[in-house]
Image 1 (cartoon, rainbow, N blue to C red):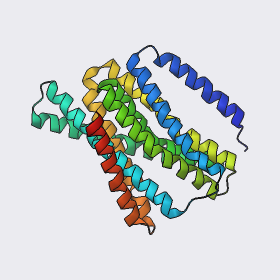
Image 2: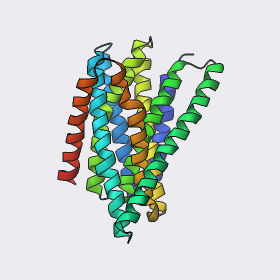
Image 3: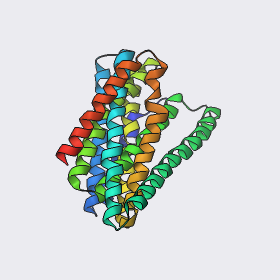
Length: 277
């Protein structure tokens, strides 16, 4: 089946408008919506080089993957887990209790992503039986990958200092740029048209504002959920990192440059988070 991109764009525009109108009722949710849209825009920007080049070298793709993994790893620690511990201790929890609660929330977030992946595999099988195009399966998979990032942005704006949430959003948007490029070039490489590859790359990032609004609304509904939500977002990101992002370059021959880029991304995000927030 042929994708009708004008119809898809109209549906996306209407959904974004309705969600923005609803989010504007609460300042924290509105900021989360804006942060999620910024991350989605970064993913869309990453697809634009495909207008000028069909593919990029595997080495460059693995280096971009490693850099993004480093940014996400530092964001999990400095923007999510440490603020969760600080919030718990401010609420009267002792050091041991705060550590146990934060650890349990990290495990819970990782388990949630695992369950979503299992459910997605079942959906994939049904989709294959229905002969749906592989492109939608690919976009759904990448959308699941982006879910923890959007949730992290929303939870941050819902409960931590706006400056720290802005740094987290910037870091996630920074790693979304090469991610958008990788998604679009991968689709182009397996035979999809340039328009389909770019369009689906853009769609893959639109889950982030949805997840951001949901995360901020959850925290706004009950402030006691903040440390749990922060830890769960970190656990979800760590699961995606360990299960999908980091192993990819090691399956090929570019593990060393990808590892070096991971360390660079980690240090860059660490410096931004500790110096600017």
